[in-house]
Image (cartoon, rainbow, N blue to C red; front, side, top):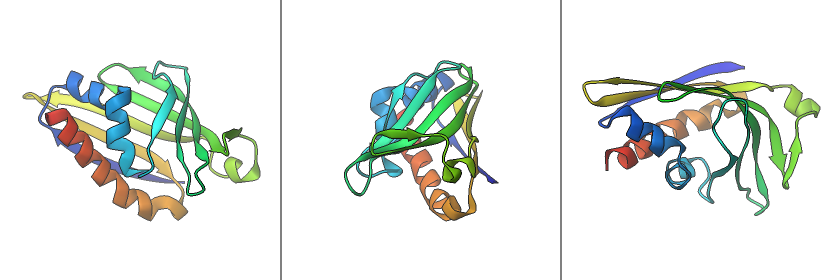
Length: 150
């Protein structure tokens, strides 16, 4: 696994950025960059919670990730522990393909200075998906910024 890091500064208070990032309606908007067919979550962001990140695949069937919220310090930090894949609506946390990368972490950190909020994203990624996430994360953060600064 490799580490990736992205960040942006948003001209909005930390609470507004936090809400924009994690509330269902705006989550669906900024994460649409990752899946043009739509992206949503089932579950909640509380520490220890199981959460599923979902979207339609190219075949129209629901796929995504099954995860757990490892850490949630409101307005400061969220750590998502990705545990497996969802294919055709079924969770896979035990196949050799999943065991090759799981668990993988995706972490969000927030800090505020002078009314602006810096969002930092750190994530584990396999080499095979690095290029696509290098292209998508900056676009997703730009969309998050636009939504939070409205």
